[in-house]
Length: 250
Ligand code: SAH
Image (spheres, rainbow, N blue to C red):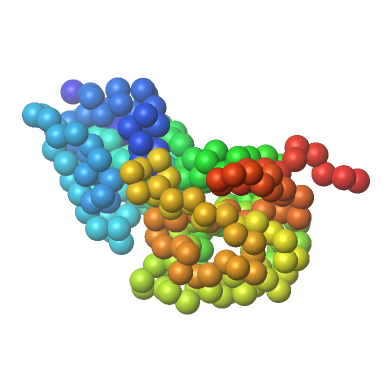
């Protein structure tokens, strides 16, 4: 049997946002590999082995998945959102590059998913409707100085910004520092969107002006979007609409 490896995005949480392509790959798989809460989203069935592991072992997990595919198994590596956005696809290709030569000839596909920033933006309106950037605020895999540099330059370039991994128990102070950098660099009227657990039953969306943004408003299940200088708010009863116009003035 010829094995294969699919690196699949499960979307932000709702079953309705899992693509049919991902569902089909899971239906054909013999093995599913991933971080514990993502593997928990995959329905158990006979003939399917679930390999759940802790978050810190991405490269080992990737190598394990590749070794199984090389041995003829049909393997799906699962990520939340999109697998190419701060997730497993890069880890798998790092393992391919460093691994045995035959891994390069394996049947490997990346199956895209709806990334958290897209689901969060859709809930708020269209804050990413003009140029934007995405920054992972975790300094697990890069120095904090680089995070700050990118924040400052993103503000200078007047991007709207989507922040992944804003705040964890292990790094409670990073997000407070990020907000400080933003306050220094931006005007006061930027809307900040805190989108928590989007498309799950725990979903909560909050929009506040930058001076009122507090570190405690974010946790590891929150995607934070900060508008550009062009981002606008349409006030109405209930949650406001936040959008960035298609065009920037000359
Ligand atoms: N590959 C994923 C991102 C993994 S990093 C994707 O494309 O979405 C994990 C971070 O994604 C979390 O810390 C949080 O910032 C964000 N995230 C993932 N799912 C989310 C959801 N349903 N609601 C809000 N943020 C989410």
